[in-house]
Image (cartoon, rainbow, N blue to C red; front, side):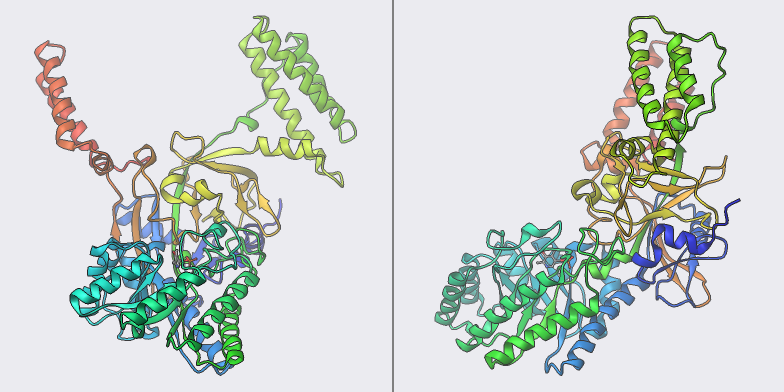
Length: 630
Ligand SMILES: *Cc1c(COP(=O)(O)O)cnc(C)c1O
């Protein structure tokens, strides 16, 4: 019996590396969450599921931990406060939450409450986002930053915000937007503050790199910037220009890229100051990344810096340039979305089935099988560590032969099944022997990757982790139970959509990417759950309704000192009826159609009245059902 302890599970799944202190394993082998990173508030996901079960909330369920939002806002702000103190930077830092990263009302509300003492503001990128954002009460100094393309209505909404006493900054992304602001000022005698997005030469790095550099979609070039300044001067509005802004993309994996961008932007700030433009804020945009695989490298799923290093570099670099140019220091703004929200939510899914294609019981051989099957049996029985390569190649040939003979009608189904079983058994052993060599041959690596079993999980990749499908983004995934037991299987995950892309076959790993996840043998009738972690940024509100799998059930959880679970709210996901309505299937209309089909059957005496009305009821009930497997 292999001894497998909690430490082993921590290492195997990499919890210590990517968990940032938010996750642990209890003595029963269950995954725990520690929303304040302190051991006085810790609780296992299994216990949370039990509490939710009492309220009849089932998996798949999205858990939100507002205390994690609190911990993250404070981590960000305090990193900047420390840097400002250390370098004696004579200005302050203003965090701003870009609402597009997670628009869920409760998330924004919790985050803004948690960040109130830190002057946390909001960034919006569209008219509807602004309309939503205007409703939040912010501290007087906190910023509301308006990005994105702006029509007149968008600007009118910004002016409404100014009248409400908010510090609104509209960021000019295209030169003509300045004309609109000037015109609006003429009309109303009032205008929001103006920021200008500058186009940098510096580029980001990682999956989102293309939102930066000279060819990026947004921002003013040096010439446009100078013309813009003149235009504002002419309109007597130069005093309204308060901020320079740039954004080189999300999840910047290399700190070097961030420093380069800040150097360039700080220089533009300083030179403009010398032109008599009294810019107050330098906004370094988003890009502060999160270490999804825990490797602390510049790989796509990681970042090679910490939040402290980020804050230090931002503060130091700006100060360095400003000293050099002898200009006053700006207030620093960052629009860090991913960092603030990615940790706060987790999706728990139930494993529905383990396909055991490669682990079926050995068939009975009678020595009466066709020669090709008997040959394979011989290979299987005589395979050793010395001959496995050659024997495996022989088996490959026999497999082709088996297929050809079957197509000619010379092999019965039973014998074909035996041949297939033998082939995969040989392959499995060959892979095992292959691992004992110093350098594993490519063909055995590929073979192993083809042989991972698939486990079916009750969720939709497209709804819950869309970036995994769209961008190959990796998220930590692991079982939430039996972590004191050695997982004996390796599997990839398939979802319940009918789409072959609805699959997870890459997993975070410290050194590389894993092609399979270690899971336990399913036990009869005993539920088994996996958690997808760190999905709070860009995932849980961006998914689509592929196959009409809509929003999942949700619960907002507080953990009290001592581990008491408070369910602040529990909401059901979209019902089948709601998912249908989104695409124009009106429930009334569907019901009417089905009713009339049933009516016809009744009239034709193919169905009794009772049976008919029972069927109508059944159909109507389906609208209220959870689209996921129940
Ligand atoms: C998306 C976006 C952000 C958020 O970036 P993160 O990398 O999530 O912090 C910030 N600013 C702008 C302008 C954005 O478009």
